[in-house]
Image (cartoon, rainbow, N blue to C red):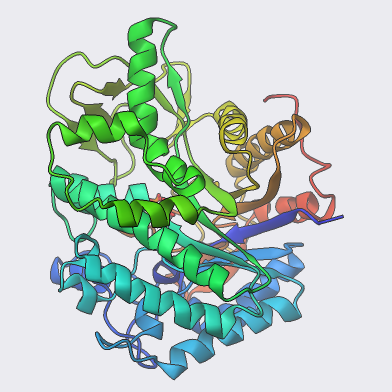
Length: 465
Ligand code: BG6
């Protein structure tokens, strides 16, 4: 029987460091963070130099898989598409090290570190970036496609496009709805084109997409709330998942957008490609649900808490005339104002299963906190163990009800650079002591998760979900 994949996840920019070593060129994140004097990932967890130690921890921790991403700026060095052999060599070493340790590599091709030379030409709002991406994926498939059986085209298109083009807290730091829609469309086109390239090569593997999943719940059962929920679902989920899994952009979404925005770049030829090239599996990153009510008043507002330590309600989502997100006073929230709601993962998996009937991987799930990792005693993160237990319980319950969930990845393997939140937002099962030579210190949750992996989930307490 196919074994369930139990592991952890990282992303290149967030853990590798070595930002200008061995021919790696500048990414849009290097450029943006350096030029704005913000905390950067120049060193991060130094995984570039310590990947063997990190993979050894995975093996010793009972993991049988590792989700990581490839850095495009390590692999492709200029606008002509020339390949950097040192970048290729590095990822061969990581993949080989995984395989030698019985760890299935689960490879994300794009986790947000666009080469700056492409950003300077317009990034994701320039259709030429789709061509550059197709060149890059072909290099990836030809180099690694015999060893890697699970590829992900994109990590969280909605999240990085909205953050970069609408909220403006990620590079290229714009606040423009027109460009947000266009960028989203080109990314989804690039996804379909990459799938088409992959299929042409007849490799023995699967390809999917990873979505920032926010299953939508309503505050009540009224018709108004149901309409708000549909709007929220289109906004949060459908334009990625319907497009990737069914090859269709939801028609009510398109109709609504077309009354206000110029969508003439959406062509029948592209839509044919999108229709014919859908994903083999869906990856869901689950941190929290979206609880919504009908829109009442105010301008569109999207505020993300990147500061930590603040009160409930410091994040805000209002989409004018569509819906408003609300906070449940009964729920617990993290220091970054993320709701803790494991039941939402169970319900969400069932929604996706019933709608798309495809294999599902939970490609990220985890919780962050400020943690003092300076001492030598075991870092007690019981709160994380409770969080993970309840989310894994939700997955096992969904599996019992027939959802085809094939794997689970905790975010993150070790502490890493958490984008605009910096390194103080710790997600890892293994601490990285940045003040003390980046030494690795497995937390209590690491040893707990080892038992989960080794028992294939049998030690999970399923009573609370
Ligand atoms: C996901 C991303 O959105 O959530 C990760 O795929 C990210 O890259 C993770 O780090 C947690 O978000 P944050 O903002 O707390 O780092």
